[in-house]
Length: 315
Length: 152
Image (cartoon, rainbow over all chains, first blue to last red):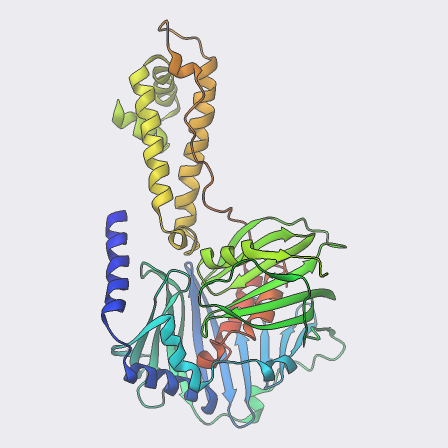
């Protein structure tokens, strides 16, 4: 079995090396990107990871640039995102978490002109046509050039470019996570549909107050190949813990390093790695700070970044 | 004998059979050597696994990693115990010597999700370029973290 896995890995990688980047595939990535920004839609999707399946409804009003996510299974949750703000409603505990995204404006999100740069870390090819939720979809496959990032198989509506399904796979081609629309209607979204169901009056407000910041003394002894620092900020987390956050990205996958002083923290640091679908979380104690590395990358990547975090007292 | 040692390592022997075999390991040099070689093989296989494979998909690989570690620990404690057991063959230096160095925990420790996972994910997600491709669907992970027992 090990031999066959190794062979599978070899095939995946050598297939990637043998083929040049196809301009059509890059064109499709741009089409998906544009559809995500420009289309209004409403649909139900399932998130699958590690044998679990969770259904959610997502609605986007492109004119108002408002998007609403409502979890359909288990504990009710709602997240509403506008251009500047993300609000997460927790009706059971009557809490609303607010993440103001003032920092985002300067953040280099994946801009269409940068899509070509993804080819440095991924082989990007067109796959076949597949039907998803009644839509004929073009598949686009991003195969990583090393084991520090995951691969993606994207299924986009051939007409509109809307992403119907996204599969994340690891170095041996095994699926780690999947998002799939089971029903989708494009267009015809009213403003009312993206408004929160909750007035949230008299709910406790947890405001993250995130703001770009310089974090003197903190850095990495070695960078993770292909991942560069995109932003440093300070924010509050939970009820009011001050936390520093540094984000690294290869243009598609991102890794956040959270740094929190241990003073006043009840939980001891449990060094090690946890996982949730494609997300890995590595925790470690550095200079009496809890360092938590969160990334949609293989475990080795968050561990390498986590182990490279260091603090030098500023001179 | 070799087959039964392998069954013992995999926990497939019943208590009595296991007890008899463990006694045999104490008295027969050849059996003990086989036991050690099997564990070295098991450890070597585990070390050769690509790292992401060992820790990515949450359910199976985790179990897969956990078992050989338990087995290696068992090997260490068993060899330790045998060193104190009465020796039947007169000179048996191998038993008295320190057990071979068995790499026990080469893979980093797997820990439960931190209690603040949903907060970390909410904070992280806003900076993931993936949102540019997929809208806010990936935000559902922060909710999933809560469902997995992490604090809301």
